[in-house]
Length: 384
Image (tube, rainbow, N blue to C red):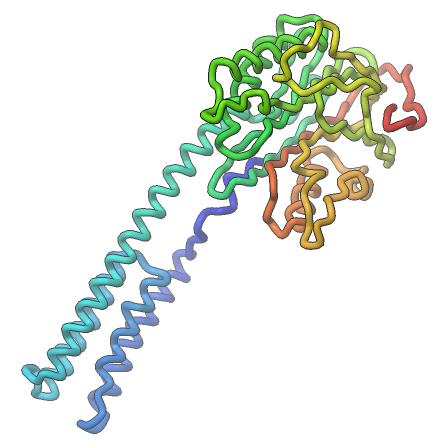
């Protein structure tokens, strides 16, 4: 699920909007009648200004202009009925009401135009997100997949977190990454890495070779497109590369400075950490062979939860980090989609909807398979 999300201005249902229109109309009629039945020394006509001012809160500029015109018309009618259309008091009231109605209409027009521009920008942003983070299939071979993306940047749907899946031969390769920084400034580096992964995943036999190719692509991008401040050396991408063969209850992972995934098996949660994690992608000077593959058991019924540091580093009002491992234990029996939805909702509740960094989640469950030769070993220093 992508968070394109959630920031759109709520629209009134058709019936509710029409019910609200009745309020300024009733006010115009009520104020007019009250003024006609009041003593000559009491002037209620100035209260007609309430009608267009109230319409601004829910109506468009056309409706606001119409209500304003009706209010001005009612004020003119009152002046005629009182026989004092040329009186300075009524003329001043008419001028003031006309100016305020016109101003209210202008405010509505500018607001509606800004809302239309924002909707167009959001539409382009969502299209860019679909192009950058392609929707993942629910099923790929014997894998059931679910994902979620939450952008920290307001009015944005995308940022510096990324994920992708590539099916090559009899295996599935997955990448989850996090560009240093957040929001729109990180999109270029994320796009470079995703494009490189989609191509290189089909041309390298091993995960270490794939990691080296991705590192070269990121380094090349950072060299060709440096930041204005010249601080290229401070830019990098943490990533986790995962390979799941179709045959055999095993999976392989390469850690490039990225948080380790969680393996959920029979209601228990285990962190899958590599004994020799590598530096993030884009850190130049790595020697060949710096990336090590860590193999672990991944059997039918097991679920892997991959995530970015925006999840585990999210803080609540007391500055406490989000306890991801503790929380997912209570949802260990859920399917990938339900698990991701639970974590997403709980994370937003933990932060009161104000994420400090982009956050991505990817859950993968192996659904079928005949081999069960490997077993989950006892957790030792965070590995399985």
